[in-house]
Length: 98
Image 1 (cartoon, rainbow, N blue to C red):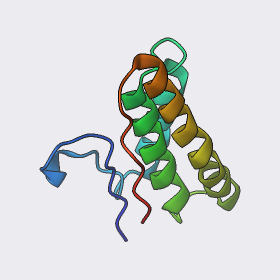
Image 2 (image 1 turned 90 degrees about the vertical axis):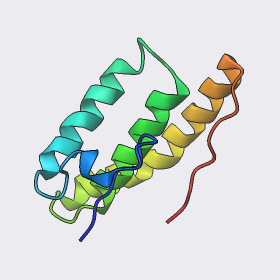
Image 3 (image 1 turned 180 degrees about the vertical axis):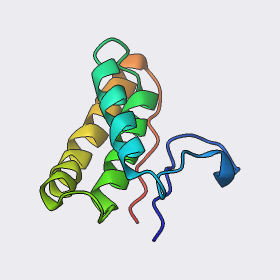
């Protein structure tokens, strides 16, 4: 089972957080990102939130309701990324569906 996070441009997957061995770390990171977004609404933070929502939604070790809720929030945060990018005058990164 793989729960990679593509929330930045790092090439070395060994440098990514250890979500496979610590699933709660992805959830903690997600909560941190979501609570920091109102103070710093950037496309990069929205994109990181989307990536973490996807990680949490796919991880079968989390409660089914939590995973389902995370999955339902993905499209909303993708839209926020696009809106934020338009406001900032930057071209958003289009989401990659797996």
